[in-house]
Amino acid sequence: MDITSVLGVIIGAVLIIVVGIGPAKIGNFVDIPSIAIVLGGTLAAGIASYPFSMLLTLPKHTKMLFQGKKYNIGELVDTLVEMAQLARQNGLLALEEKANEIDDMFFKQGIMLIVDATEPEEVRTLLENDVDAMAARHEDLIGIYDTLDAKAPAFGMIGTLVGLVNMLKGMNLDEGGAGSLGTDMGTALITTFYGCILSHLIFSPIARKLRVRNEEELLYKQIMIEGILAIQAGDNPKFLREKLVTFVSQKERQKLLDPDAVSKKKEKASE
Image (cartoon, rainbow, N blue to C red; front, side):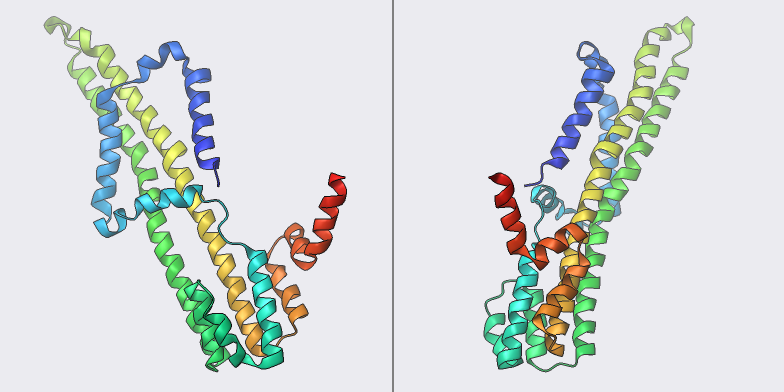
């Protein structure tokens, strides 16, 4: 489970409220009209910008923010190496039964394509088109948060203008308008404050975290594609492992190349 999303918001809120504002003065920063202008306006702009079919998917993103690292590259490499060994011993047709045990439909599709003797260029094209379409869908959904990120400060500025207009209109002292100056000025400034908080502490981090998740899935599927094509080409399983681990960092690469040595090292360190 990845708690950094919540942890970041909590740390930011504590620093702003406790260190910056001060608990005794927090009431000065609670203004219902400002909340209505910034939050209501931002959400309204988001609703106006996207169809409901896309907006209804937003609750699913909450799960993605907290699910942690979903894709286990080590297990994927082990599976591909095992399939390479099976294919070299018994031929590509032997992978059909193995493919039926796979839950990942993308992975299963790729294995069945090579079992059916599809040309390597066609296999790559089909799988990469699938990945490109997935990435485009993800980017469209992430764009919702980019839109909210941009609109929140904009509506903060709108609230500032509203407050300033009301303040200037109320400066006719002969009519007793001076009493509303503080309230109007407060609304003018607090809306900008709310807009910045929503943008930089909520919407922008969500968009960035979803992009990280998207990049993790793209890497996972890229390794999968290269592994499937290497199996079709009849690559040596040992060479296949060395080829696939080039997609990860040096630290992770050592674990994937020699998992037994890494586990022994940990056991030795714990003694």
